Length: 109
Image (cartoon, rainbow, N blue to C red; front, side, top):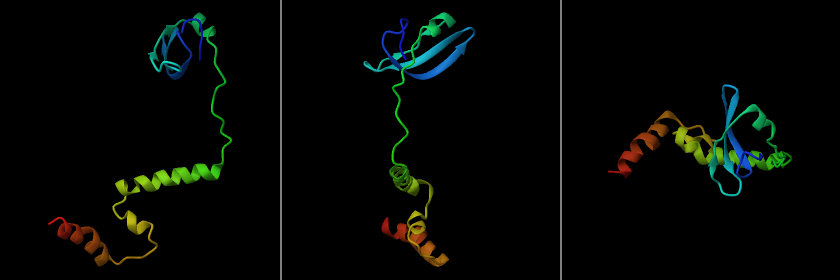
């Protein structure tokens, strides 16, 4: 987004209504500085919105692969039995207790 009231073209991060005006919070595309002018309705009309956006026509299979990689990379944080969830085995209760309760205390002792 750019216009005569902005010192450079910005990427809009937030728009906050303030009565009849708008506060636009954005990051400069060249400098990376944050700009947060309060613009009247007339000033908003003078702004130009660029069509420089990322296309969404990529390979869906690669996107899903990336999302799955991130999920697996973080899975250990919320699933204490993560290693078993991907192992395709059916452990018995005493095996779970041995590996996840007893064994860590022996190793750290």
